[in-house]
Image (cartoon, rainbow, N blue to C red; front, top):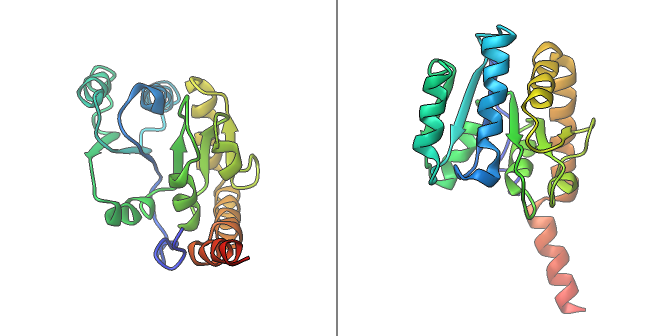
Length: 193
């Protein structure tokens, strides 16, 4: 991750945004996120929380329709596809990043969020536990479990100190272990040796 590009926002946000930047496909857990939003907004009555979903995919229209049926149009914002350079703007708008995929090779977006000082809630599949450390840089939960996801989101909503602590730890971890220039130098040294 380019830690000079992906940086925490300098001005504090006075809102609570939960979001993801993923293709809108079945394996990326968008359905689970919308179900968690339904629990949070319609059952737990946290109507001031916003959900930002960035990405395009074959299920985009279906997910938009689902959010309409659940009366979540005011709380779920679909942004569609954006170019990679604009992802920093969206990370910096978030309080929590979500990646509850059912399959994932590594999870670069979690590291990008972490570099911006944003804690993540991720599923315990593929490479996600490698990039998100449970209880340290965020929470790791089982996939397809909107109830647990909703509870973890509310945990971070109600505990700003924990949210900031996890976000700071995420930033430090990316700087120390996933810094682009350091990794390039290590790789070059391996080739040279």
